[in-house]
View 1: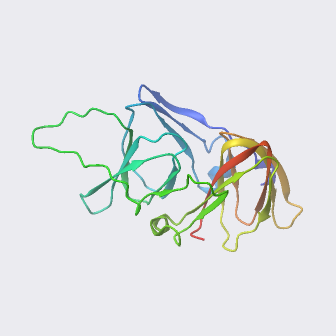
View 2 (view 1 turned 60 degrees about the vertical axis):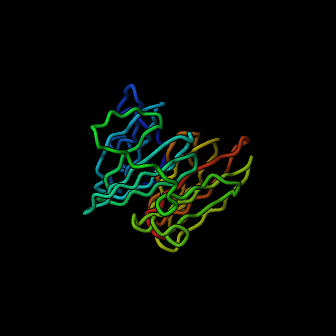
View 3 (view 1 turned 90 degrees about the vertical axis):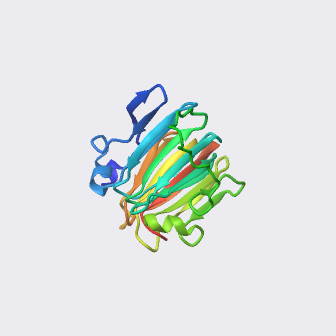
Length: 235
């Protein structure tokens, strides 16, 4: 298993006028296939629109760039739609069974007579913003109850130049999917027994999967490092 822990790069899944979708293919990375976790990246151009899609598994999104987005949720067994403004740093939990869409604001819709669009709001019940000056932030259902519906938790960490973050072994065993949002550095991954260990050099845009019962330390390079980690536990 240790030999399969490496920095992972996405491949293009779709490219269109409105944007693109890249994903990390399980066929490229056996650990993703074995652990039944997936990851992807959506890029929307101005006026780009990601059409309604049904989520058959819980997931969490994170806005890396931009301050003019909108997303919509339609929950199971209801026709009511929640339309929410998005900005950089927003955390977006999507529980299984929810239908959602996303747009880069500025779209022009042609509506039939008598139809109206839901006005977007900044609904803190469904969105949690992480774009502040704190170096490390943990988000579980304690801080943000809605994320508890996904069974997931999130950690965002911003390390300064050459800063070291010591390995932590989670009390509740969980896999971690770590996306490097900026900078570069090294992940030191240690399992039980401690002889199961490896070092992975990472750069912005890469993903690392850490299985259950493994601890991971982080060492930022000279320009620092920011990463976003999704944990398969409520913490």
